[in-house]
Image (cartoon, rainbow, N blue to C red):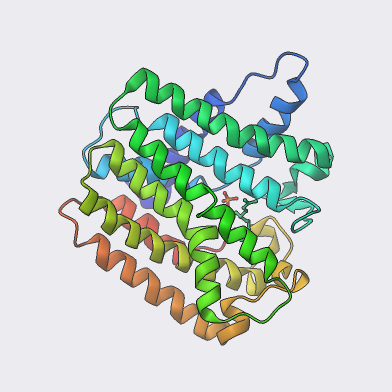
Length: 293
Ligand code: GRG
């Protein structure tokens, strides 16, 4: 089947189980569940859950055991976007073509919906660990560390601290490896771990994810300058507005494009050293370089 069609079908499958894992809008806290659902349902490419599920398949997984972890990862990713959009951080009003959560529900619910998504992700994963056993605890540990204080939250902290100040490439890589690569690495690693991959294989996937994440972030920075707002679903020039250094400000658009290609080639080269194949996953990782949103 054609790659784009297959991707669309897989996205729809993810959307269906993701919605099913979210808390029902009931009780006096219904508005919290509504804001959580809104944050997730407004769109998104579902890349991280898709990568997790594809890594699971690549290493021999055949059942639905990876779904709670894929859903939890998208909840964690969504919480990070919801909090990143808050007035205290980037203060953005639009994302995924819709009002951001705080713009629609107010700042307090923006904070709480993000908190809710992060916490619920761990409820969903710990339920799966208790009910399914297997390698679930290992997968949950991988995801927790990637999202945590030495991972994504560290990247965001250092990013905010250095906003408005000139950055070196080394510092930018430090930020990008944590803010962006960490979750993408964890998607590959958690999926593979659930299917029983060895620590040596997980270490290769970590390097693959790192390159994919760096390429993905630099592409994001390029799109923020020369992308199409209607495709991106958010205004351009947010990095300029927030006085952020990026690969584009450091080495220009052409240099940044070249670096995206270089990192993406390295990712695929490393993926090919593994003894298993998943052509869809490979194409998905390659497609991140040419993406327009
Ligand atoms: C608030 C702890 C905390 C972290 C926030 C995710 C993040 C860190 C900031 C958002 C801004 C940003 C540039 C993040 C880097 C990762 C990235 C490019 C996210 C967007 O991911 P996509 O393109 O988004 O997969 P969709 O909407 O498709 O899910």
